[in-house]
Amino acid sequence: MVVSDWNYKRKIFFVSFLVSCCMTLQACSHMSGSGSHLKALEVTEPVTIQLKGAAGDIHQTRFYSHSYSKNFQSGQIVKEKDEIVDFTLEEKIARVNKAGNITLTATTKKKDGIVDLHELAFPEVDEVIEYLYTPQGKVLKAGDYPDWSIFYVPPMPLPSQPVSIGDTWELNDGWQSMNNGIPLTVNLVGIFKNLYACGSDRCVDIEVSGDVSVAKVLEAQMDFVSEIQGRILFNIDKGAIEWSHIQSREDLRMAESQTTVASCLISQLINNEKNSVAPLKCQPGSETIELTPQ
Image (cartoon, one colour):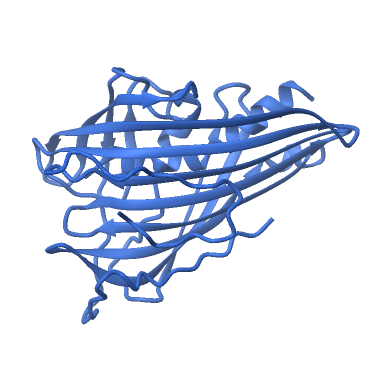
């Protein structure tokens, strides 16, 4: 199991940081790519998609995050920001109890870029955070972070029972911004698209879509639109994400001000034999998300 994989959710939800900034300062992605370069497997019975692992397992995942934001006042651009960070996260499983709950630690080993990883809810370089997850992805512990924080939102939508191709499931959860306490809710839908061979293992192709919304009490104060689209290649034998690509777009309007953000996050599990992966890259606002793990 790979916490960096589970933590991909934290980058998706960086929208909470956008809302926080905009409160202080006063479009649809189409997925394609059938995975034709991967060998499709026949699904003869429903499969179980859940987090798993064994004590002593160590995994590293490479992440590339790119976001582009614009701030407007009275229709005029007053600020633009283009941020890129490339980093490697390492996870070590400490123990797995009889219920399958997993205790592990996560730390960022390498980082190229000046983006604050805490804004993406990742540990900074050499910082160690201990997590406790259930097999269904519920977060029971996230270091010293409060249980109302984004760190306690399940990392990805996982089905509660075995699924077949075409089945869907949902994730609906909430948290409060750690910057200003604004209540936020994430709504995601996962779809089992296909089953592929990942070496000697099996991987499910999951299509993810949804949005983040603000509390109803704040809807009258702002016009906020959010959209999330992505693909996840999840290894059901390892219980880990092999590869993922997430695109998100946010638009926040308040009085004469407007902030738009387009972001993308791509990740890949590092092959322990090669100890590296091909360079990762994604473009914010891309209309296409190809299932193209290296």
